[in-house]
Length: 92
Image (cartoon, rainbow, N blue to C red; front, side, top):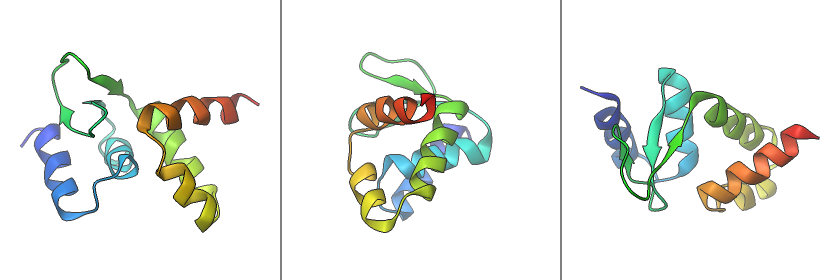
């Protein structure tokens, strides 16, 4: 079973969220291509961007550090916006 199949299987069981994808990327020490609808792929496709382990780890650490209310707001952002915001927070 490849990483894409494992991620898709995991997402079928849980609420589909970019945090779940990021946690799985960190857990498997890998990367995945993701589009805005949170579909994943092992291969580069038009409209997909790479979510690497470093970025995924940053997102997971920020989400875990936030209060419940702030976490809900942060995780409701689109993945690209969350990544941009996360790197801005980390660079300060």
